[in-house]
Length: 318
Image 1: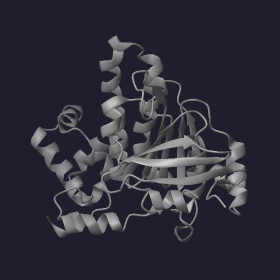
Image 2 (image 1 turned 120 degrees about the vertical axis):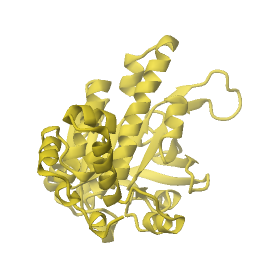
Image 3 (image 1 turned 135 degrees about the vertical axis):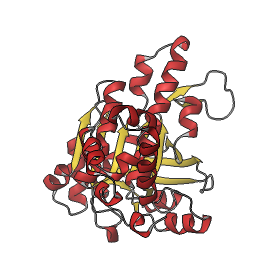
Image 4 (image 1 turned 180 degrees about the horizontal axis):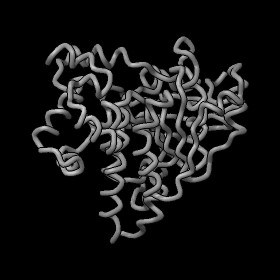
């Protein structure tokens, strides 16, 4: 790999012709990340450029972003250096290996009132904190599918951290997704928005509600799962290419055939089970206490932590 390609910061740095560059811009591909994530076959047809040429420039973009082969040691150093966002609770941060990871999807699932949306609100505020206070110094995107976003909570959480509430709200880009197609279109739009707006966190609250409503019944299950799978791959691509933290919430459904153990399970089946990097189940405890349990994470042990939901936000119990 040429040294110049490693240091490429934009499409212009890849050494491609001005004609191809213009065609890429006309097609809406304006960043290395967008080019790296492009489908070679489709792009070849869109640009009317031979497939081998398109494959070559896509590989150049991927090499420039470090998406080629690397050693396990290089991977370890890269993952260790990734910044994390504090949840506001040291217990919960420790459970998650230091906080919410960038370049990863973290899923919180549980019954109504277990704190899923509260955590999302808190993270949308905390991501704006400077790194020394557990943030990234970046903005957040909040994709609301159920109408659960409350500016009043953002204001209270910002004040509790000594931040200017209006400035904090200015740094949260909110969108109400009206159906699953809109939800997926918004995520696609983020490819150009993330670098432009300095975004460090993308929240989808909740990931499955539109899919459940639009594809009811067993006869629609295959179509629903295929579409949900595409959506999750969209989000995984965003996380990897743009170095952002993706946080999704999920609903649970009852399992009437279970007589022992937990009678609920996360919606989405195997598709959702295989996608997120970290899956956390939330449960109610006494009063404002909640229990978080890591149920699936390749690098974390299965364990639990207790946190509380206060007027000021997510905190540790006293």
